[in-house]
Image (cartoon, rainbow, N blue to C red; front, side):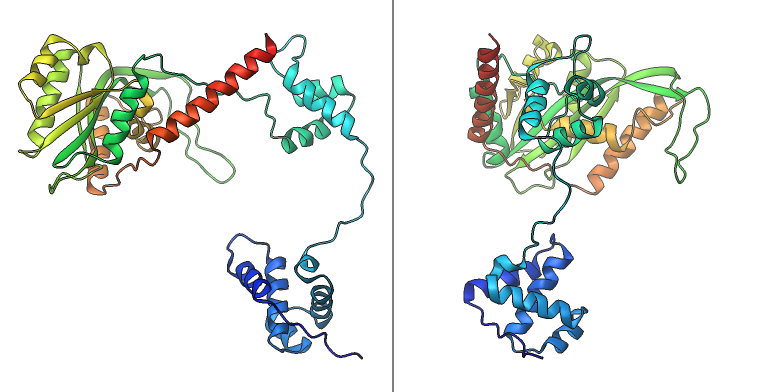
Amino acid sequence: MTGAVGIVLSEMERSALERRLRRRKIARADATRAEIVLLAADGCSNGAIAKAVGVTRKTVQSWRGRFAKDRLDGLDDEPRCGAPRKIGDDRIEEIVTRTLEAKPAHATHWSTREMAKASGVSASSVHRIWRAFCLQPHRVETFKLSTDPQFVEKMRDIVGLYLNPPESALVLCVDEKSQIQALDHTQPMLPMRPGQVERRTHDYERHGTTTLFTALVAATNAATDVKAGTVIGKSMPRHRAKEFRRFLDEVERNMPAGLDVHVVMDNASSHKTKLIRNWFAKRPSWHVHFTPTSWINQVERFFALLSEKRSIKRDAHRSVGELVAAIQSFIDASNADLKAFRWVKTADDILAAIERFCRRTLDVHAKTA
């Protein structure tokens, strides 16, 4: 029996092996190999390493020898033998190209079965190829680019408020979620159980609608009890400038005195009537910032949470009163456990991303023209 192979590590190798051990997302086998080599470098015998790591002496001897021969590269798995490929690179390129540049005769997009029939391979092979190249012909996403001629100026203004609000000021994101329906399902719900999701009837009864006017404190740069993440909400039956004016009065009652208030809102007609303009004109410390596009208004994120967690569409409400109470309950719970939305992208980052998207869109249309 020969003696154990001696292991001497450089600083770089020891550092790399220790990083493997500390890394959370790493295969257990890779971490074990790194631990074997580190213990071997510390002078431990094969038997002691096997006992400490929980493997056999032969495993320790094997990885110890491979590291001594090939260093860090020796700890990687070697290519395994297997059946030769039946689909060559030319056929794969043909499938990918057809997926990207052509459509089936009587459909808007390819399915795995249709592509398999057209290409002469199995549907499972098409699925593997699409997965390898991240192709999903069945999916489609929507996008909307703002046509506001002052998009850049408005976007820089509002993002600047989020990231660096003025001194002694609050930033409010204001909007309304209209036509929230009080729906009640026509038959009892079947609760979730192992192996079956919750079930409910697809039809429902309408019991009226309400509009939720909401103001979200997006940022603050003042010593005040009103913290970022605070939500002020009020449900009303109509969605007019008259109701919006009443909501602004409610917001003003909840705002501390002596601070500038910057209001971010969209270009809805009810936000620009003479009644609303006069309201802001009488309050010089209130400043209006109109958004060039809806996604830049952070209150939209709160509306998404309301729909997701309060499950307006999943809940059953037999009256508008029940619906309003459920919405107010969610707002109260949100204010009791404040979690402000954190805007992270600068205006330059957003504009650079939009530019890349526009250039990619133009390139695609130039190729198909």
